[in-house]
Length: 113
Length: 114
Image (cartoon, rainbow over all chains, first blue to last red; front, side, top):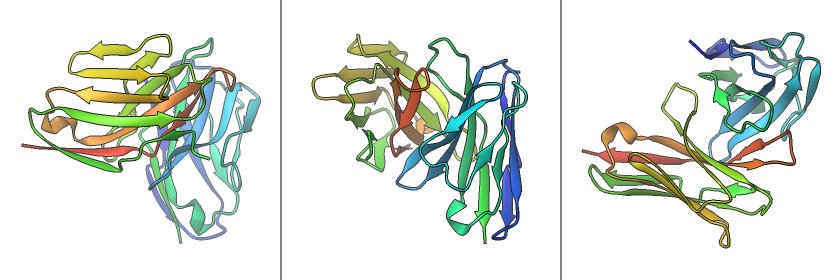
């Protein structure tokens, strides 16, 4: 089954404790991206990757890091989480070549105390 | 600045009636628009889209209308069903950014009552 898989789905952590949210897709998509969803703000892009070893900042990158060492994986790293990073996170992917539709994972709800 | 806006956070409709969800955008360079549907504890899923060269696209009970001069699009659901209750996100694609970066609105929560 074609899918984008995120882990963990739910996480409660404390300020300053480094964490990684993994994302993996099995559709051989070149493009991958991370979004966060917050009430009243919709989905905002954190980081994106056009292909392996090519990553760049989105609209709200502060406090996050990413890497793209393999085509299928695009982990989101919070080096020192803070309470304002409490949010619902979505990983998404799509083929390159002008394709517009994004395929989303099921989401990771993160709470930072 | 919010380039894509959904000004109604919520909408309640009776089963069998029409649901109309609205979306406004500011960037005239957007060339493709999409609607996503999101159930609780799930990721957004693609629903329907429209190219900027068209003014209407229909798929079963779902129709999207685009008014480029007003920079406005709407999603019509007819007839509405209880299973349509979800959050609906409007998205616009910027062809000059990331090969089509999607910019999302705030979402509208639709509730269809039996």
